[in-house]
Image (cartoon, rainbow, N blue to C red; front, side, top):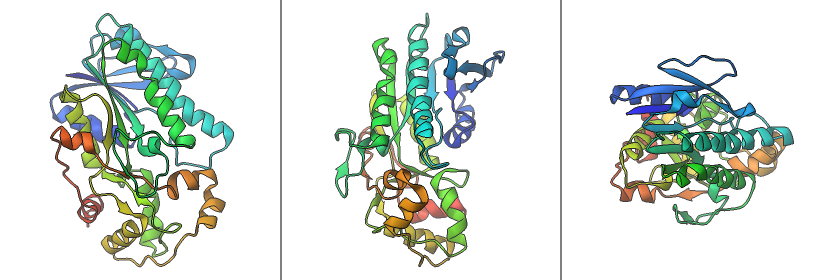
Length: 300
């Protein structure tokens, strides 16, 4: 297929693009620029000014939409929260509306979302049929997925992939945790009882490739490994793989002092998510258990 990829320079995109190419697909990267000239391999859009090069999009078979500002690279000021929301919701609506008006729209769009959709739910098992939760991230995810509606209305198959915590040394939460844990100053966060729904970058890429090809899959799809763990178990396993102690806990008040609102939404929230639809569709996780996944990702 000819596959358009936004967010190709991000954590998932940098792993996905070579995998698509190796699988025999032709990749067109959608990059941000107000003045860029489209080529066979690169085209441009300017979501802040509602500008998309429609001509270069016509005829693509599939779209993987990953663009969006990082939620974990700084405290959440009001302005930053607005940028996080706009980069996801407004950008997705612009892209889907543009695709819907093409003479030959793509057959499928796989659009990123996150398990933040569910809010913090303790030890409740969450599947794609679970109701949305409360809080800033849940509201963003709900609007983010709803922004795909123009594509759905145009008959395009839409898959909203709800990513869990992605295990990769190239970026994201694991890369941020790596230095303090290697120094032996890592530890549980808060009570340690909150569930962490994780997924190795290998399975993120493979799951996207799988849903692109699986015409029976549409709507929300949880992209999380089938065995979520508590923060305490994650911390203990991470330390074991690194061969380092994990005796320096971060109490809830310290997390809130350091990270503000982001602490409650990311570090202290509990989401026990199950990848029901992927497994029902026949997808087999390459890395389903935490310790082997960490050893693979960390090359330990």
